[in-house]
Every structure is written in C-alpha cells, then in structure tokens.
Length: 110
Image (cartoon, rainbow, N blue to C red):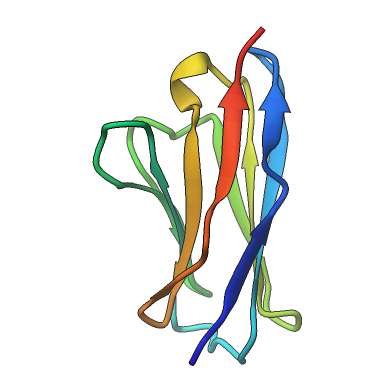
C-alpha cells in the first residue's frame, strides 16, 4: 500500500501564491510520474501537472501559472500555484503508482 500525504493547502486571496507538497511513503522511481489533479465542487477531477526525470507536463489551462517540481531523494512532489483565481478553488490531489492522496483544499477568495 502506497500512502501519499499532501499538505500546503489553505485560504488565499486572488493573485496569491500557494505551494503544495505530496510525500510518498515508498520510493518512486524517477521514470514513474508523480502528478497533481484537482476537483472543484460539482466538477470532475482534472489533470493539473505531472513530472518525471524527462520533463514536466502541464494542463493547457494551467500552463504559465503552475510549476511542478520533485525531490527524488525525498519521494516528494511539489506544486506551486501562482496568480491564483477564485476558479482555482478545488481539492488538489496527488497521484503516483496508481494511488491517490487524500487531497488538500485550496480556496481562493477575498
């Protein structure tokens, strides 16, 4: 069983920045992607970004406002969210090795 533990969510004003973290309980090979998804209220879960040793991949809608990074030694993936908008409000989930984290709530509101 793989555990993925997310942290870093919270309430932020429009235009603000948040950095999310997701730590895996096992070693995740660099060739295995670690990814972020999000799910807004009453909407389907959608892809945000993923990363392997080759390169990061971003959802077109998020490109330019998010940065994904990974610490291979710590089996941890990060997601920095910039210029946040109210429509970015969602639960953000980490995904790796076929497992999901429990999610971390991001709320963008003034």
